[in-house]
Length: 125
Image (cartoon, rainbow, N blue to C red; front, top):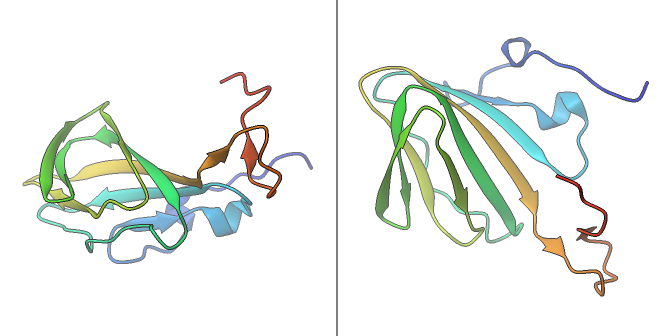
């Protein structure tokens, strides 16, 4: 089979909001999480300096604030936010439920890098 499919609602919730999809999808180079945030929910402040993963947070429902290095960034449905690995980030949900798709991946190497990192050459998207 050349693909894998999972419904996030079939994946156990962690921290009362997060559905981590990378394990059931058996991804190798990308992390995908769906976060359904109850009113007033807050994630733990964290960074990804150790694994050098950048992240993109896409708010697909509701409104919320993502605090990046102590800078509150207001998010509305449809907004996407890129966060570098070394920055501390925290989701702070407002008075209504919100939903995010969180995508993380290691940095993309240039074509001269031979460490086995991702290459961008030929990338059409």
